[in-house]
Image (cartoon, rainbow, N blue to C red):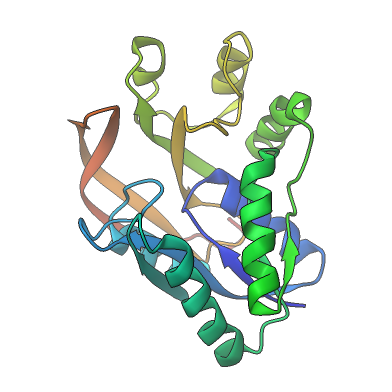
Length: 227
């Protein structure tokens, strides 16, 4: 199938991409919603250039859907209809895990655009830790770039998602995958990345309800053969 993939830049989207490719599908375009007001991605508040770097590293086109709160769904549907024709897409995929209201929204969008809705990571809530463990063993590298304001979570900012992180979060009363927005990640390397994204000189920015890592600069670096 030729698939449009909803892309946040984080671990869930990356695992979805990887699974779809392994199943023999072709991800023809990444879709990222971006705020008209601030110019950054809608979900994670990421700079567009960072998402473009992922697109280049994955050798897959990126399309930014310009949205605001009032017109979010209408703008999403409008752009998906255009991209469906442009890329001859058969389906649209989302990286949601178990929140039914998110799936209901995506399936409604798919129905209105004549596409099949795919949820490659869909699971029961109790299986979230297993999915985090799967990510740590996948070969992809991701960093925590945003958390809600909570002293226990803020210490993760700038931290790589690895087995030590997984063991720590397993003992906390939150979703191990951060499905409720407890934390967000940015994937910078992995098996399907033709180049590694090197992240340089970071600082912590504080917002009304969250804190996030801001990078002064980044660059795409060639990878050693086989890496």
